[in-house]
Image (cartoon, rainbow, N blue to C red; front, top):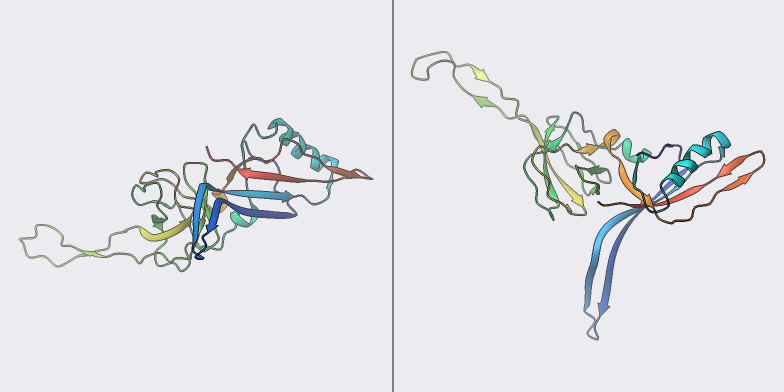
Amino acid sequence: MAYPSSDFKTVSLTSNIDESQHMSESGKTQARRHGGQRFELTIEHPPQTKAEFMPNWAFLRSQQGRDQSFTITLPDKSTPLGAVTGSPKTQAAIARGTSQLAINDLAYSTTDVFYAGDMINFNHSKAYKIVSRVDSGAQDLLTTYAGDPLTTYAADELQTAESGQAVVTIFPPLIEDVAAGVAIQYGANFTMTVKQKNDVQEYNVAPPNIYAHQVDLVEYIS
């Protein structure tokens, strides 16, 4: 299910990493990570009429607090800075824990095809942030000859439409293996899977029935 509203006043996005640090008497610092990374969101809606507000409120109540997950579209991530077009896919199988991904089926020789700060996901619920901007590679050319290579023919130059490629660095590293040919969810196709952060939600209403509301969400990783 998808959150019914995209009418947001502000969106606060937080990256949460559970890590502890200990400093010894010599001044050396040791860090230990206790779990994975996840994103947290605070969505503040602008003042809404009752007709605008109630569908959001009913949807959140139907999720039974923190019990159910749903997807949400973030306005700034649905209009990314990168210049991706078409249907980009993973070039080969990528192992869990990998941060650099080879992506195929991009437009050739495109500057900033992926841009730092934009977000992507794959065929699992985790969202990933692109760390640095990259350009896609140029078209490859292959020269061959028509007919029997042992016979003298005029050379015909054949251009092969090799897929434009880019190597993208993401954060955090992949939490699951991703197979070759998996579609990249990016731009208008990107959604984040979330749950409500709290079991209790509240709203404020002022005459003449103008509602103020914010919702706290945490990324759900299945």
